[in-house]
Length: 295
Length: 339
Image (cartoon, rainbow over all chains, first blue to last red):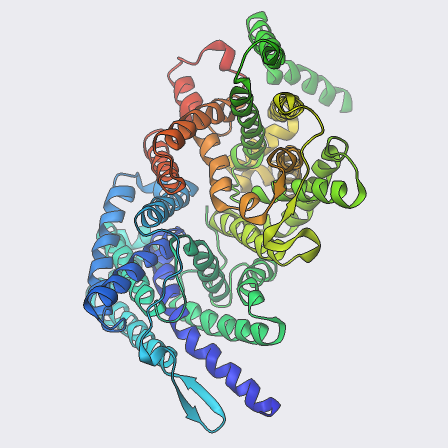
């Protein structure tokens, strides 16, 4: 392989993983946009969807990509329940505080422990034929599983975007993201917008959880690594920006693929955390974000 | 002008320092007296080591929670990454002993200083952010540190390093660590108390309430935050160097878990963050609850669930913690009121 083929190959792999990262990050960024809190339980909730997919596959032979049909509505419900139980009773001003971030942190611990208790922390993965085969374009290979996952992810992100852009409820959510007080003044039910946005965010995470089952081995406590990665994506893109999270996901995923090739795969995860510091240092508001004033 | 200022500061000093009544002095004195005498019981009682272990474990967490409280409580910057200081302390003393033969009891203060230095440099970067971003950066710090230590061959990688037992009879082996941890806990609580009642501490509390107003009022918020973060690393680092030798091994997966960082937060929040006695009460209570769960449920996974549930319950129903809630109702015993 020539140098240019290697670079092209790394780009292809980076972009096809990046699409799935973008799907995970889209949920997190929507939740941040509406509620102004970082949902540290996002990856833990994603892990629930991974386990649903895993057991649907091992017990009933359900294809992990198809299982998205189950995990999206189930995780939407889980999201709504989590919201009602943990955030529903909070006062409005308390909801945006650091207290809520710690609350999502406690949710993450509860999920991690429960999953670990029932299913243990062994590595699991779903093996389907397309997870190990590839298309070839000249000298460059295109892993089938990653390609399907990324295409589905992009489709889901576009539907999310269209929902926010064209539906009435979607407009209410966008209004709440821009300025919740003003939205309330013009008659938006921000409570409803928040519940729906939280549910949708978790549902997106659920779909990503299904798709990652055959791409990366998973175990309950792996969600800390995931949440670190996801946070770096949305911080780079600018928190609360859907387009930003997409660009951030692709950029960092490609960078990590290059790091992994040139310095070894163990450093690919470190790329995300290091990037997080560099972004926080030089451009805390991210690429697409407004100056962040989160308390 | 300067005269006037000094007059004001001496006047407010007595007010700020609060009254240390004889009752409080007797309370603290008798508790310390008992704690100092307890190890003597190894000479005439059996099975003392378990109690010594529980006590020194509690001392360690009192030190960790009280230190965390300076940045997380007084200043209002929640850090989930204080385990990094623990690892710095542990690794410094471990390497100093294994490679150069220097006793951890000598290198422990150095471990504290290295933690402060690291805290200073890390604070320069991460304290440019606030709120949620700061929490994120602290988590990233732990993850980045863990990856680095996992691949640091000199420090043993994922396997870490094995440290020798002290060359003293087994039944007395816990006593040096007991006194070391007691000293660390007393030091950390004393530092927390002194900071709380200083001009610096007032500045920190102003930052936690409204940083922009604090800045406008002339408080050097940036320096204060960084200093608070760095100082909060000192006793965590010292405790880390002792903890490694007490366990007799150093391993990234033991020192650098997010759960351990969460425990420091939970203890402070449970007891009442931002108060002097809160983290102490929280640590004692938490170790008790934790021991109950470990002996009854026996599983580290259920332990994680219990930590999560407890944290959620405290946050939802008693955000001010035990000391804070009691104080708000005027029912706080005088001996616990150090604010």
